[in-house]
Length: 434
Ligand SMILES: *Cc1c(COP(=O)(O)O)cnc(C)c1O
Image 1: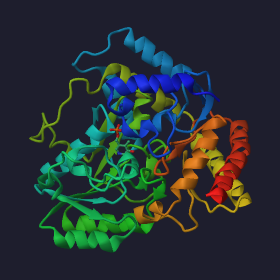
Image 2: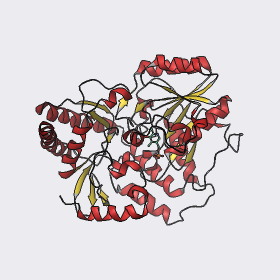
Image 3: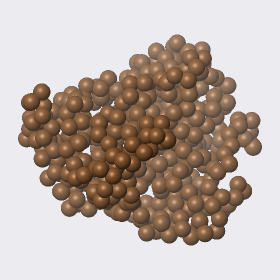
Image 4: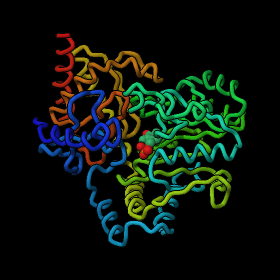
């Protein structure tokens, strides 16, 4: 495979855009090499500007659960766009999408739309603070909740990859209210509660997807619920990634625990920029213009984005067995990776939740960010490159989650596993040379 045109495009982009990209992970910093510049997608495939074709397991980092250019979503977007791109006034499309979400989630009585996951979490946090009248909140090391100031502390994903857990430009004054606990470790949460004068909320990815894929134990989530109730704090599930991915109801389809507030994004926009936050009516009523907690957006609830989200959600609801199929394919892929690794004596642990999958080159189970960091990045890097060169597009960091789309056939899973055997051999061979 040649990457000449992408190399030139990356060099050109570099002159005008910091790092040549609009989101750090896209620069391939942790795996090296030039990121393929994408020309188009179709179904399960990505095509770059050099004419290379890839089986896509990134799916725009989650949103494209039906693959690229799904005909129904495409049609919804085009027909809506023809009526105007934005009005800054209410449309019925917003209500239609809100109704679908409220019907789906027991935890959500009312929902508000924003333009990204970052915005959704930032707004939910403000609402939790406004509702409780408290400033402190608890987050978990390795969980990523977007790049807003007070949440950019020991975050996973790009922040973890680049070794910059909190960023210059974030005043310490703003993060002094951010208490850090360890994922799947209830005692560390208890200690945070003890240290604080008043905790507004605990925010968690109930299925963490930004330190690799690391689900929370049911008993841990139940413990969080009890601690929050005992201290009058709110529990926020950040389901920007897991929503409509782990199951139709996200992590909430797999746990008995009910959060007070939920954040959504990614799949909810069907590929368009959308985020949302929702919860109990009593809390949501505190939001402006009904209540005093301010939040706004010029393009929020954008009709084209709402149409894409609505088409996606209706398709998901109409296909109840979809998640079983996607989970089976994800499991099959991970079993294949495990077998391919074993053939080379490489350690590999894998995880699957619905259409989400993750793997670490380590032999200990991964239950938190410390464990995740034990994964061998050098092997990952070689494996990633070998897969890419053979036409398989995996997330370019070992702290990311992979995604199966409905457009991905069983045959393509088989093909990917066959390629993984070659790639594992290459990853292992180079290891011996070192
Ligand atoms: C992606 C993600 C975000 C941020 O969403 P953006 O749309 O990238 O701003 C927040 N929380 C979680 C769990 C995410 O995976």
